[in-house]
Amino acid sequence: MVALIKAAQLLLSLSILVVLHEFGHYWAARAFKTRVEKFYLFMNPGFSLFKKQIGETEWGIGWLPLGGYVKISGMIDESMDTEQLQQPPQPWEFRSKPAWQRLIIMLGGIIVNLILGFAIYSMVLLVWGETVLPAERIPYGLEVDERLKPLGFEDGDQVVSINGETPASFTEIRRSLFFDPVSEVELTRNGERVQLVFEEDLGQFLVDSSIRRPFGLRVPALVETISPGSGAEAGGLMPGDRIVTLDGAAVGFHGDVLEYLRAHPATDIEVGVIRGAYARLQLTCRTDSSGALGFLQKDPMTMPEFQLEERTYGPGEALVSGFALAWTTLEEYVLSMRFLFSRSGASQVGSLVTFGSIFDAGWNWEIFWRNTAFFSLILAFMNLLPIPALDGGHVVFLLYEMVVGRPAPDKFLEWAQTVGIVLLLGLMALALGNDIWRVITGQFG
Image 1 (cartoon, rainbow, N blue to C red):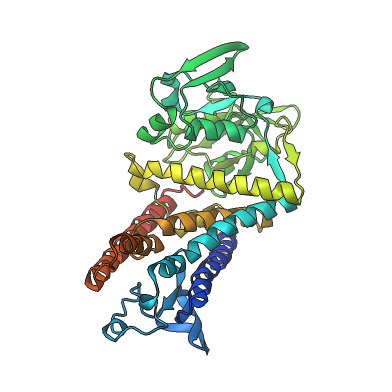
Image 2 (cartoon, helix red, strand yellow):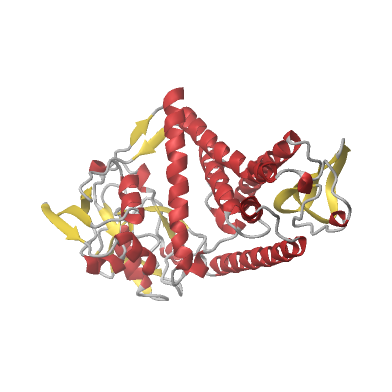
């Protein structure tokens, strides 16, 4: 049921974005009196679930839920319909329009997605506001990836400043350490000040080392839910239990528990827990082959010691902050693309399964709209990439035409379109393969 709820949210979110993206192309084309032959949600190889001719345009819904398209007269696109190009150009065709008009038509969908991302974020802030964890209210400090400890970081560190700037929230700490060119970090550790200075950019080190989650919140090992049929269930672990010892050794935090369990796959573990206010119990639980017991950690944002701050926004504030949030989100996504060129870059690519996994297990409208805004910005950026078969590929050829004074040959455009389609199909196959592997290895939980 959870998978169906997430799939339904993903389908609705992408359908909204695809329809509005294609409307961006459609409105721009009609503004310049260019004929649009088809407007489809989803692809329709072979047949359509629904279609209706209205005026010059066939409106329809395909059966293959992979995006959508508009077919513009006189344009080489993914349909590879070149028969039309053998005829003399007609006034209503794409190829008959000035290059600047064709450029606006190709950018129409991207512009709509950018505006939509900004508008949705503004709406979310206006309706739901924002919940943040102030930097000074992180009770147990940071949990640090093991590969960062040789640089001087330790679990439990509290961040005082980054490059001399004091971060306002945990989100800002994580963003700055991950994306900004960091050369200096000031920490408090066991009540003492510690200064870390880096000869190379910390963010670049994270990319080179393929560290995608360098910093998290250090939290007590509190059990939220138990996986059916797991070693945790068989051993008697229950929601609400706090794990305090493993095989007699004290463990203070969730990260310590995970580290110990991963080092002991397929092993019986003596788990000491505190249940309720006072009861201390010893349980025997067996890890699986990956070193997991089968329980979900309690969300730190629901723990009373993490004192969250609720922010509300008026209409004007929501517009300004929504634009800032959209810009920051897009900037972070673009910067994170560096990981595709790291040693483990190919394994980071995900398909619709990955996108679907970030939705809430219930139907939470705030999370739905936040994800939709995020996807809208991704769709804008990805379509702007200079790859033939994407809007960005057409934009590159149009800019070439505007600079040189003549269009690229039709045969070359056909060849480039074919290459672009092959590249996209290859990327989709890689992403789907990665997600199948994640499902097999249980990485989606």
